[in-house]
Picture 1 (spheres, rainbow, N blue to C red):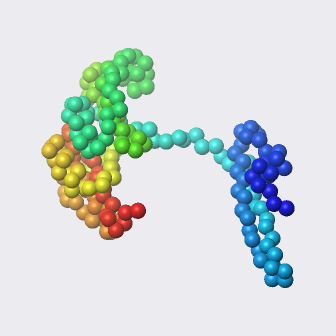
Picture 2: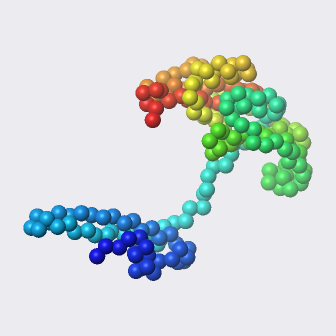
Picture 3: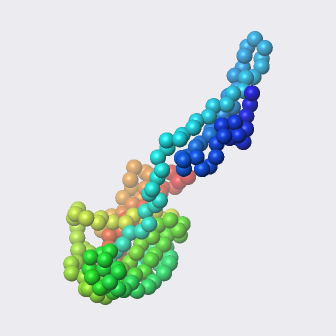
Length: 203
């Protein structure tokens, strides 16, 4: 006997609220040819994953970078292709309860990639002032390394970013004929990776 999805749901009395567990029914029609009468036997295989673990992680929301000149950094990332999603002041003791900096005042700008999936939060501290500067730390320094962006045309992107003060860290390389990639220093020494998929490997 053959059941559709609805038939199986009714037969098994499955509802969407059973103990908040995820139940997946995969219906597979398997046609088996019997040589004696050339008839097809159709069967249904279903899997009931009642113990599937609920995933609490939704996404990586953003990467934060502290800068000295918010305007200059925004202009750079706009040229790269990101969009300015919003700009505002974050002030008060409540914010300090998160950062441990007390009563703080920070101007932030949220930049978003064209696909809307990745964001950079640029922060300029008004109070308290920044206390350390590791913007030009070498690539092998401990801590934050770089943000990597995929671009359609690496040469064009570099030429546009050079006009905003970007500097190539070393050179553009061909990685196994899959990617052209490089590191650049953006405004205030921010380390950024750029990668272009080589044409014969593009989907």
